[in-house]
Length: 131
Image (cartoon, rainbow, N blue to C red; front, side, top):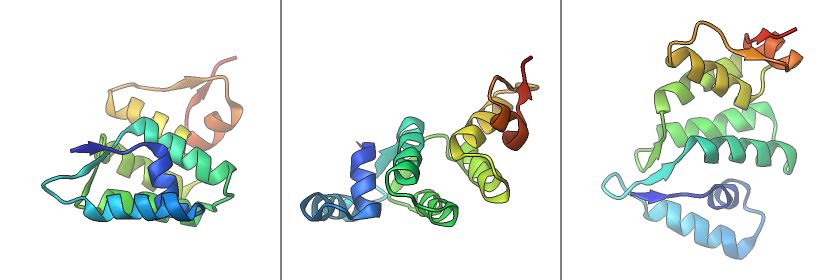
């Protein structure tokens, strides 16, 4: 298994730097079910942040990017069941992906609620506002 950093996935999906894109595409295409790539939760959150903020990717495209990663037999996504739940939550509402992942991770861990100071996360991701 080979760990994949955020910048490799950004190049693979955004294709903004010809040389790095060529290398990232070659690397991803060389992955296999017996020698898969590994994408951590930290990489996923960072990837979504970068493609949203820097590249202005829209919600549908972000959902598609996550779906591609989750469907791949050549890529293992950390805690994929939780990520799938977060993707479903993200697709069906207004919450940001990170907030969806936080809420779904807490639920999966057995938390009865997730507390926050973030009004938007409370409103859109079902967290409970403190104060």
